[in-house]
Length: 323
Image (cartoon, rainbow, N blue to C red; front, side, top):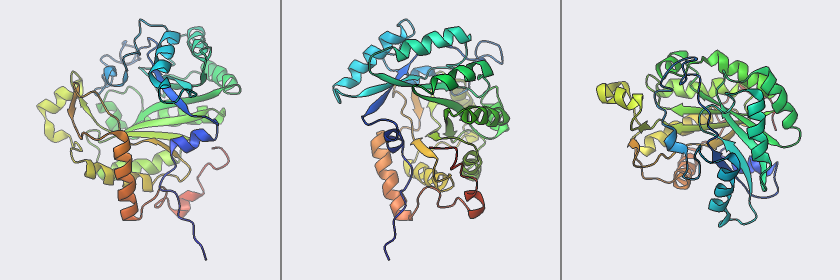
């Protein structure tokens, strides 16, 4: 009898192939947004770990129009795959935090650029009004559209400590409201936040798997120069467990992935901040190298996504709701 070895994890590239017969690449945008925990609506100073320079490429500057940023991003990537198409990734800060008509203009400016075949909109769980959801639901019927929520943690104690300005209950509500509209819904978490242990992070995987998320990004906590968290670390480093040993982090990720729902797409495991801004951990490992090492270690351990997603949990797999 022949048995089929389950895939080690459900990857984002395979997920995109369900929607596009060609290669697609995200182009990050800075559309001039702010956040409610920066402008005083909910708080000041933003999240304690946040420095948006860590994910803004050179072409991604607010003085440039959205169309200009996209055209420069296209030129940056075109030498690799001339026939590539693009997703406009509204990434910096909270990309739904504006008046509805202003948001429409920005999204539609992006979609009007030649070669742009969809939108990915990064935002917070507490910044998604029904009026915007109505518009996004309609838009998603004619183009690829994903809303990506910064969840960061499922523990309210952690969310308070990092000055997120929202609760996990806000996340639950926003994810359900969005996915119910038929909109592709993603989440983002940070592994290694202060006060969280190996066990609480692994338990998080199970909690998130009960939400109707289509995709999940995770990455290691990085201490970035100029942030409040960097100052906190300097004052009390014992409050932090930084994964300075990449192999320790790999084993954490494997434990985490084993507890994820099998059909939840895992988009990312790590993030790389500019060396000049990064305090720790500094692995010197490229993303593709990390994935290769992760895959090798998963094979050694006989691990795969959903391996520890229990029988009682398998009934909660959102199979009817997720692609």
